[in-house]
Length: 412
Image 1 (tube, helix red, strand yellow):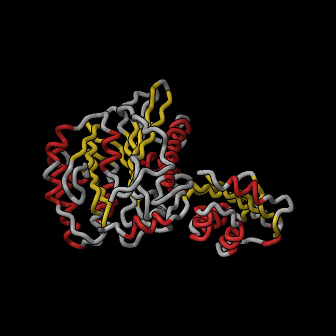
Image 2 (image 1 turned 60 degrees about the horizontal axis):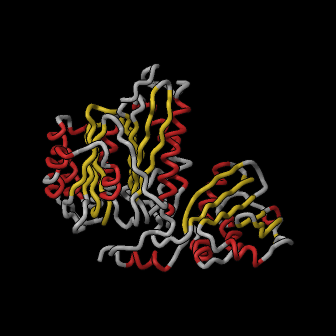
Image 3 (image 1 turned 180 degrees about the vertical axis):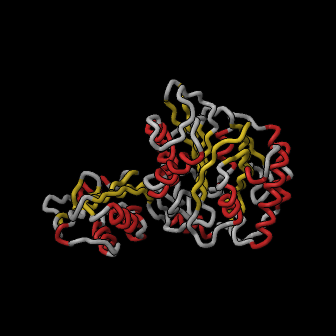
């Protein structure tokens, strides 16, 4: 069932520039959907540095298991992604499918199977026919082009209502460096690693070890700061690839102490943050983006736990959906988070309007002013714990009747 484009979608879909050394193609394999593409192939002209972070679910999919095994080598030649079927909880059949797919892709790319990465997203528990994917690989490999980023983002969508793309570039050490990324995700989003699926490619000359270290750090304030419904997928995958085609004067960035690394990190983080917030904006049934900011917590860890307690609360999310500044529900979420908090030191604000202060309703509270603020499509909830210096920001969305409708007919 098709759903209307989220009202929080970007006003325009960005056109991503080519990244030297990377080519993309899509195909319609008929895995679940009809009259649309459902396979994306990303090819690299030469071996490239690869890094990845994956779901912490104890029930990971067969593609996640394969990626974890192959990422140890730190080298990639091709990525194969399908939508419509997650190939998760599929037993020996699932392992057979990823093995056959990797072997077919390796043959087409002229590389070892260990340099192939695979992701699948969609329904859990349904066997995935490898033949449907391998049948489209030869033509896809032949048709791959450097400017098919938009098509790639559309091919990996499931309940997404819009394709998610982001790009950033800057001159670093005499070379124009580009970072491109795509993502998919709208439900089952509480990643604790990344999002449903996301792939970032750069032409920066960065070693796999440095890329992995940066990815592991930057996922925390970006994709790991997003929640839609509190559920972590079996398939969550975030991968990054560096072709090294940008000719920096100083050569490869091979150390965390490299003075050029902060400039690259800024680009990398900008793309990850953009994609992560697009996932929150496309939360199933979402009508409002909610930004939860916690300050004054006992530690950064405590601030994150309190922020997620607020962001994952169905009572808070439904109040926002109803445009009700019910700060009592925020008090509830702070209190149940399991972190240090003192009722009589707590302050809460919705946007610029402080509604509670020092354990009671703020004396300047104006129901009319706050109600007007709640009609907007970007709601900031700020909880100041007033106990320390810990702070965190996470993003979520409101919880509407459409979320139930979308998930109620997901397999229909």
